[in-house]
Length: 318
Image (cartoon, rainbow, N blue to C red; front, side, top):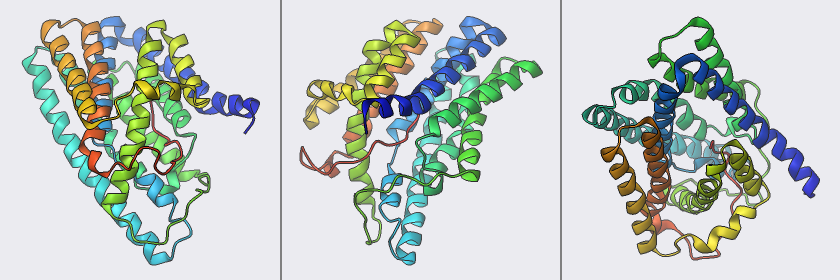
C-alpha cells in the first residue's frame, strides 16, 4: 500500500472518527459544563481500562477460520462467545467494585456515570465474538454513534447523569450498524482448519496487547498537545511510526509487572490525593495504561518468543 493510500485510509479510519469524537465531547461540554464533562471522561476512561484488562482477541482466530469446515467454524464461534461472555462477567464485576470505590472517595457523580457507560460493554464483547462485525470502519461507526446519541441527549435535555448513557448507547449503535451492513473482513494471510482453544486466543491477545501498549505510550506523550496530539498519535499508528518506541517497552516479565503496578499504583495515589475532575481524568488514564500492560502480564505464559508470528492490527477503539 502506497503512502497516499495509507493517508486516504487514515482519513476514514482515524481522522473522521477523531472529528466525530471531538464533536461529541463539544456537545457534552455545552450540555453539562466542563467539570461534569471531565468526570464523565474519567468514567469512560476507567471503563476502557477494564475492557483492556479483560480483552481477549478472538476476531483474529475467527478470521483465520473463514475457510475451515463448517463444524470447525461453528465450534470456533461458540468458543469465542463463551470466552467473551466470561470476560464480560469479570468486567461487570469490576465495574461494580469501581462504583463502590468511587462512592468511598466521594466521587458520586463518577459513580453515577459508570453504570450507564457500562451498558455498552455487552455490545463490545459481543462484537469481538462475531466475525461478521469485524471491520476497519468500527471506529467511525462508534464515533458517529456517539455524536448521534449525545446530540439526542442534549436536544432532549437529559439530566447530567444520563449523559453517560450516550456512551453506553453508542456501542450498540456501532454494533448494529456493522451487523446490518457488514463489510467482508480483509482475508488473513494464514488459514486454520483446527478447532479453536483458549491457548490460541491467549497468544493473540498477548501479542496484540503488547503492541497496543506501544501505541498508548505514543498517545500519552503526544496527548499534552490536545486534539492535535491525538491526531498525530493516530497518524503514527496508521503509518507504523509508533513501533519505533518498541525498544522502550518492557520486554521481560518483571518489567511488565513493574510497569503495570506502577501505572495502576499511580492511578490510585492520584485518585486518593485529589478529587478534582482533572485529577480523576489523569487517574483514569494511568489506570487504562496499566490495565493494558496487566492484560499482557496475565497472558504472559502464552506469549511466543520475540519475533514470533506476525498479526494484523486489531480494530479496537481508542
